[in-house]
Length: 201
Ligand code: FES
Image (cartoon, rainbow, N blue to C red):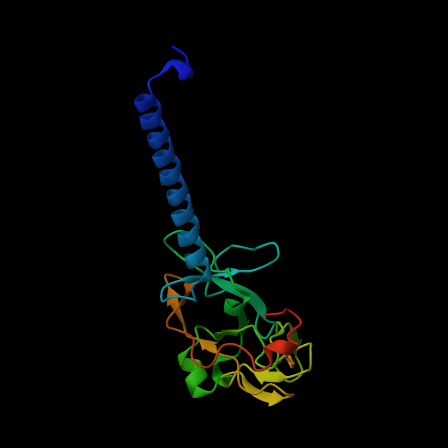
């Protein structure tokens, strides 16, 4: 019997079932993508690990012994330890990680650190550039756009340039030898003049 020969009720039933299956698969797919997107867009969560954002080690988790003392900052993102997913859905959650002399840290910064490792938002509070430069002479982060400088040993307070506020700090802890998130961002994320951002965000 051809399709044309089947009774209208049978064709209609199959069409309805087909639509329901398609709808079911469609909704399932949307839910999966949405859940992944939400996880990737979420800010760092307590017990997240930290992972290298770029380079040969991109995606690898950072240990508490990684990074040389006072070497240029490294960009990292949080990693969901349950799924291994990197929370890199937005650059607003990228982090600067650096190792400093623990004895040189201000008290509040020392409380957020592990073995001299400290982490801050990587987005400049002025117009949102990535804070990519390092002034090794004075141990300061430096923004390449308008040369704001931040002191990572003291809460990333502004020590030069037009940045209006310090970089938000992320508390860290040692989780079985791996660097992990101990709390939410402390301080203000984001930037002052989005209209001037070279990234259009
Ligand atoms: S965006 Fe960083 S100093 Fe202007």
